[in-house]
Length: 301
Image (cartoon, rainbow, N blue to C red; front, side, top):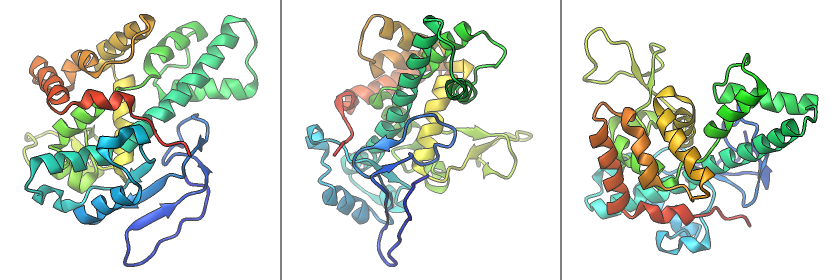
């Protein structure tokens, strides 16, 4: 959580100004080093006009991504985004809102990956890990669902495949698809962008078309950022997405930049529609030029 005291101005947007160095929101289960860079803002815009004013305030323009993306965490989407008549405007609002959080969540994973490779180097050199390093390894294994009874070598192999990025274009395509560009009931009521379920009764939202006898609910998240982090962890750990992780690992071995169009092929099990779902994602990426976000970077100063 932020290290600085938070302030709130009544009658204005909820705008938290955090300290220059702080832990990313909700990172208690992460070993990512403290974020250092432009202070992260945590904002809860109430209207579409509020949202657009925020983009202007931070000189954040989707046509000028080379100027860097401000590190902003949005608590939720304005309900009235559903009333925006222009589909092009609605899409831009959605993508512009989500991109900073996708980059922040990926940066957290990137830092964990760096920590992993530090440990891997030591283990390959037969250098005993310190107690702090052993603690980091245990934390990574727990976070990425690696059993404690596997050997160090096997744990490193699994973690190398699991602790890795999801191309921003692919993450944005899935968020758009699953949340209907931020207008779905679950994204509005529960900040759930990716349709994730929970089986803890009373903790989520009951789907209106849930089959009789089913017990699942759609998860609620405190913020949109929490939903994004959960989605990335889901792709990086769930057995259903092993093919996705293997495609990504092979691309890394070939020295290739991660490509959302290619990696989408590993997500057929994300939907009962299987290959049609993959084609939908790939079409979303192409039609909305989401590949351009592969080069987007967070502002660092």
